[in-house]
Image 1 (cartoon, rainbow, N blue to C red):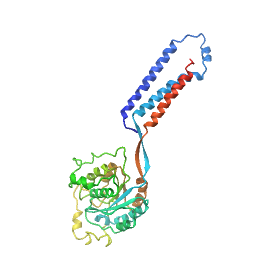
Image 2: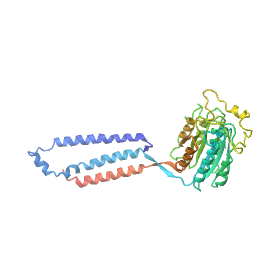
Image 3: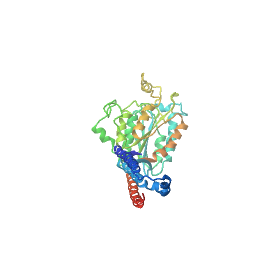
Image 4: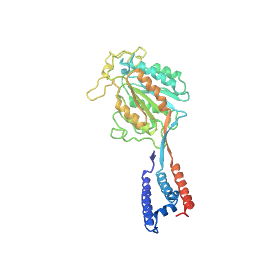
Length: 371
């Protein structure tokens, strides 16, 4: 439970103060009481149940004041609310490193199998789309309830040089904006404030200026991004984060592959893109060179992926083989099928506080004639 106005809880400090005043008053009252020659006679004259009855109105009043103080702070709780309809955009890495054979038979084939199974497991009311990225990102299939075209697009992935993770997030947001009027298109914002590679939307190169969505919670649309490398094209993932946060879209990330990439080998169909000539032509080899301190483009750069998910309200996963990847995809519907929603429950504490005030008044009237 959290509070919208937590400083209002200071009002509750009046309760122990009043309790101290009450106890002090009771002590003075006892000291001024008439002295009886027989204490035993006094105890027998005052029935035992009446001892607590005389204090019950005050106890109820103090408790009601505490509840009303909590109500003044406007408490709220967070609960899971199932989505009726949602959009899932799958962003799949098709960079050349996806041909690595450290995952049998290679990374891209394992990703294709798991992605198709994931898409087919989604509820039929869920819109599903596909964004593919290597050196650039593009919408391969717009969000739709039809699964046949989406499965075919996943089957037809072909690798190319480069990994543009930040651009993939923006393209996925653009795909969601096409079907959800609550999500503003990204293109208009970029036109007003162009982002160059290496620049920062926050001005300092960090994602620290982003904030979590407020009371409205997240939209029912999510991005599931799978990559096996590090961003080396276009804008950075951190530059894309503010766009997702502003649109209240959660980004779930999956880092795929081992830390010891195997030889690169893809089928002719998977090599049908820019790398149709194979891996021995020099261009692809040069694109994989990296200096000291730079992330290995053949290994998933997990820390930025975790931060992207954390800042946008999603969850980050890692999978070292096809079996683990299948388990990650299998768990996603449970994650993306609900929304964290904040609900203010001030009325509960206000009602209980008022009820206790009435009970205190009734108890006082009922037992007031007794000493």
